[in-house]
Length: 242
Ligand code: SAM
Image (cartoon, rainbow, N blue to C red; front, side, top):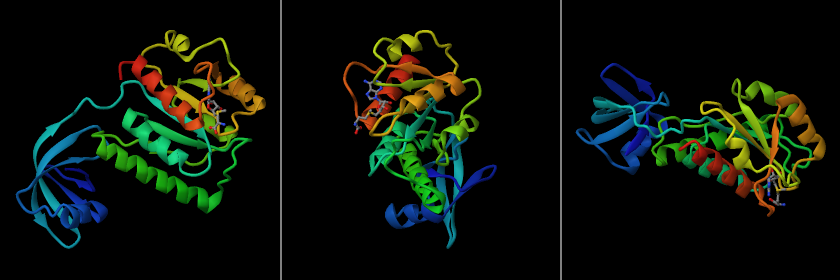
């Protein structure tokens, strides 16, 4: 059983809140039971439940490890806001595949409009989905879901020196794979995926000008936004051996 550590000490860590509830009420673990804790730093600790108190569970560390489960190439998914549960699905599956962070993007053709408190609430929900998927898939770093962003705010959220790629169905010549062949190994990749109605041509031009984004094709068929996001992510990660 894997748990997200609430507080880390030298020879022990503590679980509180939902993690404590899950251990006590759902899994009914008790003193002496073993578990794994992770804290988003890349490490993982095998531990034994030592004490269950009202507010926290104390776990004594038995062994430390640094499992090689995170993708070596940082891949960021920036996707246009789409209706329904599509983005939840993309975040969950993207986390399993190795996405490092997710940026929900307001685009001209996004049917879903998210502003203010509603946007923050949705981001919190998406972050929880990423956390759950990270835990479930054995990752040691959960992807960060960033605030809902406009195009103009996007550059601030991108990793330094990254290469932006914009899968665009009107691009017929340059395939994603051919661009990946030219990219240096360690360079972060940002994938910009349009909403249901696709990107407006002016948005593609903006991304080319301001982000030096390269337009790429994902093949001759038009994919749904969520399929395009996961297919592109898989291709980039597979290309780097992740
Ligand atoms: N109307 C469908 C839907 O409801 O999902 C298709 C949407 S498609 C226009 C959404 C996004 O997926 C596009 O903006 C683009 O980023 C990506 N995409 C889909 N098919 C593609 C292809 N063959 N090549 C490159 N990008 C593609």
